[in-house]
Image 1 (cartoon, rainbow, N blue to C red):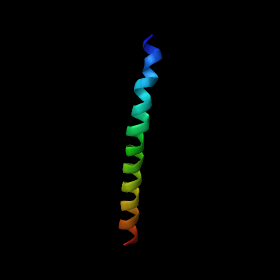
Image 2: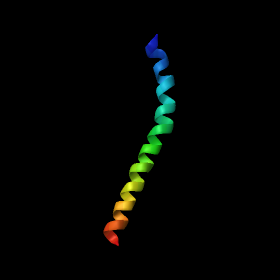
Image 3: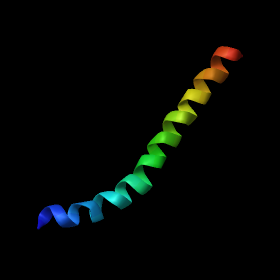
Image 4: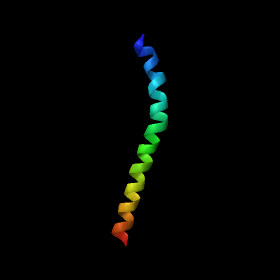
Length: 38
């Protein structure tokens, strides 16, 4: 029964937290690129 409601918990986590992690990583990557260019 616990396995049936786990997706309900993980869907908002993946839908909200994961994009923030990706954007944070992408932002830091852009900052590193700017440092090496300038």
